[in-house]
Image (tube, rainbow, N blue to C red; front, side):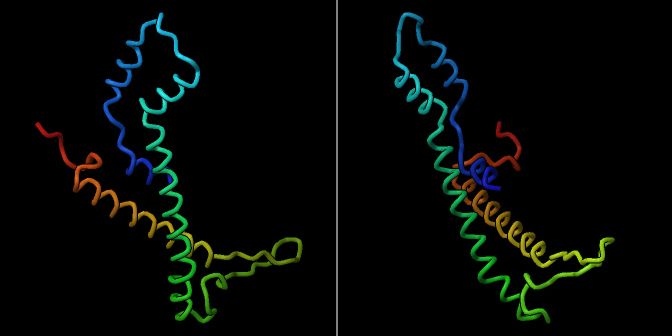
Length: 142
């Protein structure tokens, strides 16, 4: 999910220009390893992608905390078990012991996914509104 957020936030510039600029370096022009490394970082926008990844990670942690600390207890008010984490089914297995299926955790994870997807969608719509990212839902402009 974080990669998807990073893909929506990160908008690379024209890669054809990057390739041609990279290829036009004459063979007699020698660069040190660090110069080549920094040229690579600037040319291919690695820093922007890393920043988008960190922001996506932070947003995911924020949504996880929101679902765990706000939504799950609110839903638990209406459940006889008291919380989503307490929703389980115990099934006897062949060895005579019981296996516990915690479907409440699954429901919590589904809610978490839906909230993250909604946040990514709203962020994408806002970024495309200001032409920060390319809106793939619209046809090509001629």
